[in-house]
Image (cartoon, rainbow, N blue to C red; front, top):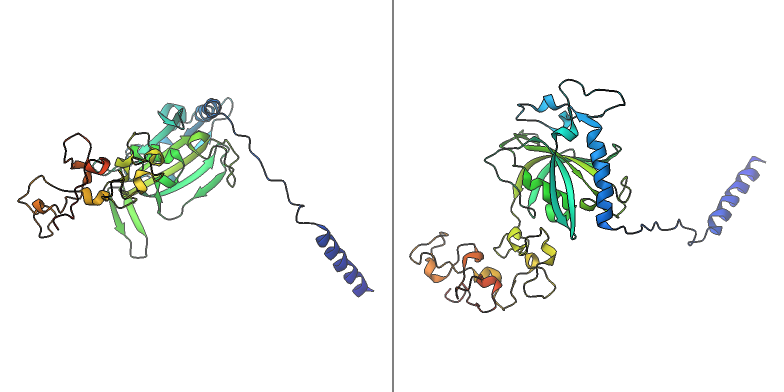
Length: 327
């Protein structure tokens, strides 16, 4: 009898499974595209509301040259409660910044916990960074974080990151611990409070609803200047219009943006070959055994302007002289 019952239940499960067609899937979530300017106003109110009702343990960071985001505790201010001694309301501590993205004026906020090494590098908006971070929504849901230092290309991240990290310096020193880990001292440490337009905007991410303002806590350790197309021109200099967007700078209009184009002006001479070095013809500036008058280049195509029209050769179709001509 038991065997019959078991067989019956198995048969029932099979029938139910077969009867569910491939079309019986949940409907795809369609997010209505909102006006960016209007959404920025909504996000600004949400962020300011958060900053006005949350405080942090500010005394922990006073005079602390080696802080960590793990030291940071942000707490909601309950109705009728006063900010505890040695703590600060976020709204009184943050810096307000503005930027333009997608033709919209955005406001975002930075809590600067440690500047980092004031003599160290600051990342450009298109550089690689090595960081530790944690990201959460305004209702404190952590949607992403790192355990060990992780490397990112700022051009591949939400727009807020390439606005915030150039505000901080890298760490002063680092020590290899012998177990595969590295310890950094005096890193750039802070928190960014971003409207959805500088975050994921309408894109739905795990644990992040569409149009959600987001918060990132971070430690900035190191940075490297990016040259994505290896043409000798750092990618940040290929932002011709200065709008922090490399995708819309295309000098030769061949649909390949300059930062990914080895021949920016499309004149048939590669950008890296238009690095002529004619500053001091009797010096071997790069130590390769060839004098500079042999057009071996100084590693910087931006300072070569053969016809003197104010446009460097690599962006000027009238100048096609190459450093390969005499080599």
